[in-house]
Image 1 (cartoon, helix red, strand yellow):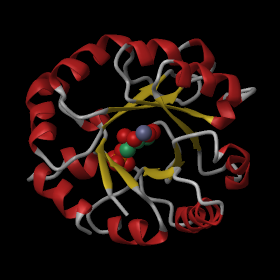
Image 2 (spheres, helix red, strand yellow; image 1 turned 90 degrees about the vertical axis):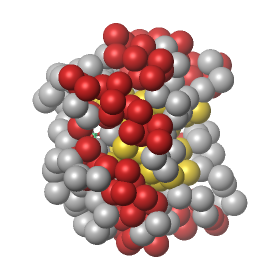
Image 3 (cartoon, protein in one colour; image 1 turned 30 degrees about the horizontal axis):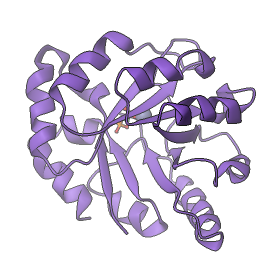
Image 4 (cartoon, protein in one colour; image 1 turned 180 degrees about the horizontal axis):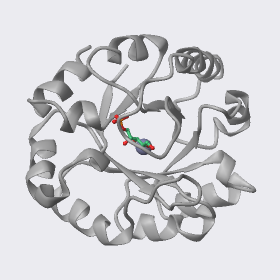
Length: 216
Ligand code: DX5
Ligand code: ZN
């Protein structure tokens, strides 16, 4: 199985954003993970549309947008237009995910549905054949630098089994508290893609951290 690493730009140094994006470009990272927080769905505010411009301009890797916002239906198209390669939103933030997924698909952008750790993983089952990727949160969305929740491993195994049983190509991405020490067991449990913020940008050698996670 191809392994994907998606460094989360939330942990980058925004005073040196171009430098940090060039590091990502040189590295073995596959995607740039973009955490958009609205201060309502999560108790934190990160950034929005203005920063999509430099991300798009300076980063050569696909932009993997993770929306932690209420009313995703209002904004998904604008993120598609801003250059997203993939747009993900929280199942628990949507009244009806299907029309929102269709808005993203109509833009030719990849779809992702995500859930916080307290949402029953079984709620993703009806959508697995409608999306390109599921994003399992392994911390509560809102902040970088939190501790990985080990119960996520069983959720990865559960979704992996369901995807394989139905012969689907849906990818499993995992986000939160991921580092060079736990990357191996996440891939073994059936994850395809790992997001890492502090473990990349907080590392002495970020490119090496990315390489180590990918080869874990
Ligand atoms: C949390 C974000 C994550 C976060 C990961 O709300 O969705 O993508 O940036 O950061 P680390 O890797 O530091 O847990
Ligand atoms: Zn994220």
